[in-house]
Image (cartoon, rainbow, N blue to C red; front, side, top):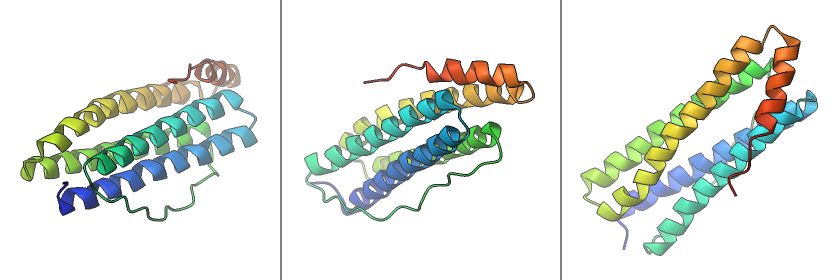
Length: 165
């Protein structure tokens, strides 16, 4: 049986992951509106990844005998001034998610919940990859932001990202 503090924290992390998924969906809508289908596709893949992360936690909590308590998430932002602003927002979101995972990991460590620590290690490693991926995309978009041709090239390049399914 999972400890109540861990159950509450995992439910909060599920909400965090679903909120991030919803945010990426809003970003995708912005890019579609701007006729940047490649960037929109990239954001949809991020959306799907965040949903998968939420479901990993969802299943884990149930497997440990916990109760999933879903709460509302805020409507995502879908209006931005530029692609650079979108990717800056995405990086801030990933950094916040990393902090949240780290806090959950610390709580599990404090409570000597070794099963949860083991489960969360995947998330710790995944967040390194997520921050790197979004950070690299941001750096490229910032460099290309003043050149339309470069931005269109990046739109195609990021849109060609394969699905992780």
